[in-house]
Image 1 (cartoon, rainbow, N blue to C red):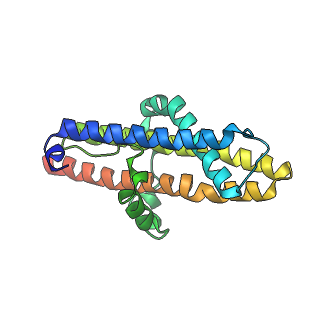
Image 2 (cartoon, one colour):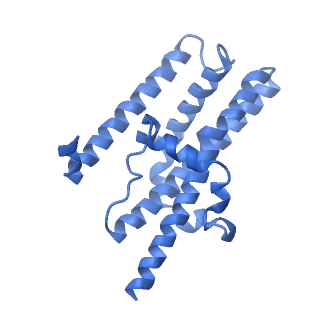
Length: 196
């Protein structure tokens, strides 16, 4: 790996391949889980069902909307004044979640969330963060609707577990994207002030 880290293109290719392999493994595992008895009604272990269903919803939304969300006006994802410094997110345990992503294969899922050296790369990274946040918002909405259908359909345990899984699957990633975007915006504004 030492030789790879000296070549940015090789490192980027390595991250991409690693990401694709992880996505394929997760997707095939979820598909195998649902292959026998379908998606609905819920079946088996409620946690495994919720994680597998959440993954399939997430990957479907990501494939279908990431390119569109990348081009959306960044003002749609603008930060409120109270969240720009990130202190509100630090109180939620987001640092522990960030550490988990950095030190586990879960951080490999999106290889584009790495910062290069140039200012234009900062702008690309901001758009990647917006896109990632949008995917998580859409996944959260779709999954909550599925959880409500489980609750109404008499599968309360599955519905509640699906709602609980939203915390690590969607809410923490959304908060992390917003916290990191605030940090990146502060860096960009400092660069702008020092260059003037």
